[in-house]
Image (cartoon, helix red, strand yellow):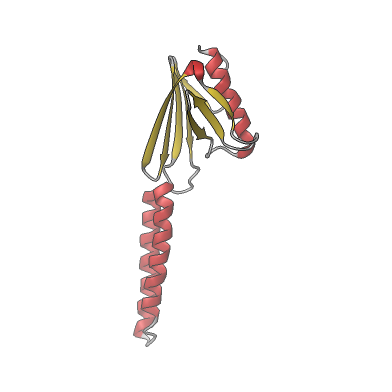
Amino acid sequence: MRGYRFATIQGQSIEWALKRNCSISPAQLGWVYASLCVVSMGIAIGFWFQGATFVVPIAGLELLVVGLAFLAYARHAGDGERISLTGPLLVVELESAGRRERAEFNREWVRVGPRLDERSLIELSANGRSVCIGRYVRPELRAQLAQEIRRALRESA
């Protein structure tokens, strides 16, 4: 069995773990937000003592909006797709905003193809069910991922 670009091999199992590329974890983002709040409110309170009383509510509103944006980012930081091929099963697990979906396919019946064109999401289908994968792979690499999954389905059958 040749090496794979996107997959890892563990014994008789081949697994593709496709994750969102996040530059900061939700915990780190929380610390950044807390320090932003301290600095911003410290400056606002300084201006409040100088007589600019409207600065504190405006800074509070600004921090609320930034906090909501950070919360939306943090909810999706752990999103990803996990595809595993073990024995007769191809298992696809999709996670988005903490919600997890799972689909199992008999490897012998799985069709792998682009949904519309070579740069669109990859559609895995069998027995009337289908799942789209590849959201976390650059569009120009999706055809390579689809080819790799096809090869794994053929080789380890």
